Image 1 (tube, one colour):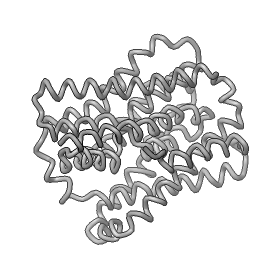
Image 2 (cartoon, rainbow, N blue to C red; image 1 turned 45 degrees about the vertical axis):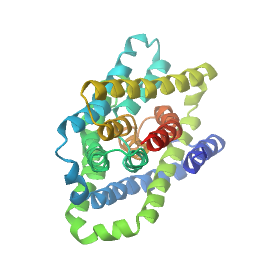
Image 3 (cartoon, rainbow, N blue to C red; image 1 turned 135 degrees about the vertical axis):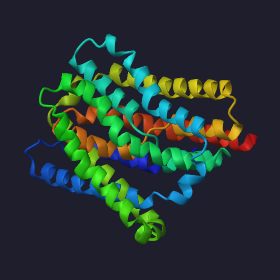
Image 4 (cartoon, helix red, strand yellow; image 1 turned 180 degrees about the vertical axis):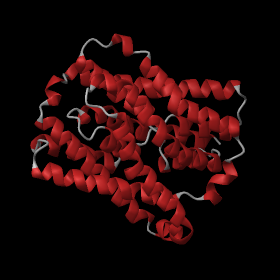
Length: 318
């Protein structure tokens, strides 16, 4: 298995942020923050243009599969993390836990889960439907999960202001994209490679800027080696716990082989794209955003490696 190039670049961005930390008053930080804000709007504008009714509608009728995937993504994941909330001992642990909750509350990946379903010989129309719907549901559900606990952690957290940003930076661009889809959808598909590069570039700017500010404010000084080792092992366990639960449920529900594979790959993955841009909206004024993004980056690297192996094995066994 080759290490994903984008993961290596993400690691490079974190190292660069460590070498060149920023403060909230730094001109470079402010400029990059404005660039990322505009970039987030364009990402979701293109997301609206990409949504295709012709690809989504064929998978619409399999409601049991869709319900399982969405409940896994937005309920099972967060409930597992909530079980560890009573173990929080101090503010440092609470921030790490918030990072895990943010990871758990995110929507599923779009392209990755569909590609893995295809490799594993699963139900591709259903995977396209679930991956697309998950991103839309996440616009509402992810901020709701985070708002329940951010109000306790950050005194200046303003829930109404957060949803104003969501409307302006996410919902409005998606809506415009959907309205213009009949005219421009073909162009988005034609230049999908270039748009993917644009999406990743915005993510890299968000990751660098957030980590640079966290390093500049010495937020990571409280993260010990033990914390990193424990976090990595916990995320590894989280992926396999969810994967195992979904595998058991699809057996109990007597899903077909194709539907089981779709449920596994759409329900157990988390979107780095959505996570990065949501962080740019939800945590734009917080100094600990770098720590919040840390579990997501670890999970992203892990899911690429593990699920790629599992998908390849399913495909060869078919």
